[in-house]
Image (cartoon, rainbow, N blue to C red; front, top):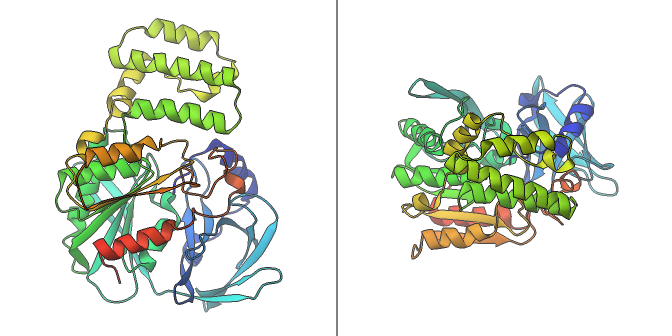
Length: 416
């Protein structure tokens, strides 16, 4: 999951005095058959400190942990806010964490043993660019089916947080990698994903016939682009990925997020009108002086905080060429692999229209599965409004999300 949200940054910067040793704690802890607690390092935003996230993969409960003692952490009522509702204590044997206990007031203390998963640092060279990554291997002997986590924007490998833990618990090896450091067209990012798949196919502990892609948001549509260009990709899970021209998605996001967070109708109108003009200038290169004057004259206006403010016409044209002009639908139409697409009814970044557009692009394909979760926001947290401001108080993934991926993977690429 990626949450590059300004509303979270103040919590991140003020609530984490010193980050815990993530490698000491991160992993899967088995409470009972069918119930796993995932502890994951989480990059909420590339510019902010990493955090330690707790997720019960059976109930969908998720929350960031705050350290209050040696190997002791607090779980709060919401994702990032609220009173403490449980304590987690990690148990060591020598210097290695082997188990944890979970204690909530009035409830039993749960004990969970750490699964014997393995990890190794790896890198993939794509031309002159080196993609740094990590390969996680589940318990047991290979060759394993593999999920490659495709980055959701300019983020590192830990932005996907809980999801590698989930796939590991399903018996898949997981490869996560950092996006290339320099901005590039989406087709280049898709080529990076293909290069990762081709690299993994040569490993003896990998089932070369069962390497699939999972991508959230931007990573979802990049995964479909990659699958349209390489038959070595066995399947795709598109998680909140848009399926319409990127400039249209940006205008939808701008208005929907602002409305959900209570921005005044006048400010929303001004912001959308400005960005609509901006997209026109980006597409045809005409009218930049008027746009630049609007930004100068409204520099202190509250609605200007909502919009993209390019520094120059050259920057705007470059962003249009690499980002806003992109349309994933023609690529989706060429995908032949099994696809699972998950969309949230309260997603204020990816319009629900994307589900119908994907169905139209892949019309007649029996291997396309689309599922809509009415209460899911863009990050697939169970939400009330879908706005950014409520995220710190949310506490669960949308009900059924993990179960849906479990069922689909068993039908389309068996794990353990």
